Length: 160
Image (cartoon, rainbow, N blue to C red; front, side):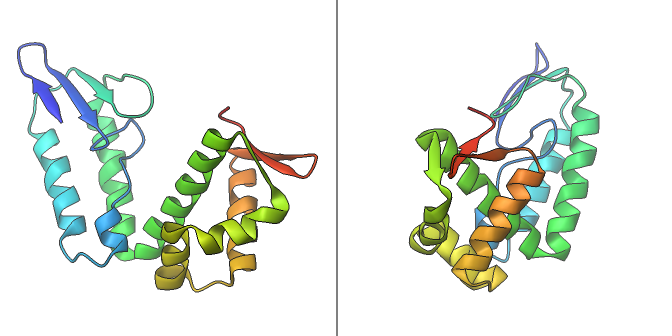
């Protein structure tokens, strides 16, 4: 993060977005301090006099207080169930892959989630699904959220 006190501008990177924050990878790896570290970062932001936030993702925003409320609520949910972090991370990883690739054959998703280390590890450590069930869940959840669509046997990102 970078804070310019005279301008009251916070460049928050992944520490604070308008509707959340970046993935807490440490929690996925079993780091016992990951959630506390995230909470400490949010508390540090809350102590600043911020007028404008320039996040690492999303639009610039001015209501840091409301964004912090949402972030603290999300963090509390993650602290209660690390599986929520795992599911969120898996969806983000597949979404980013589709943004980069532009498309992925639906038939390849099962192999992809079994082959890509972070997805394979998230599933093995936190979700315990078969690769087929994991792929089906990911695709279905991202379709319901409107993040991707199926076209002519391919998955495509709605963000592209």
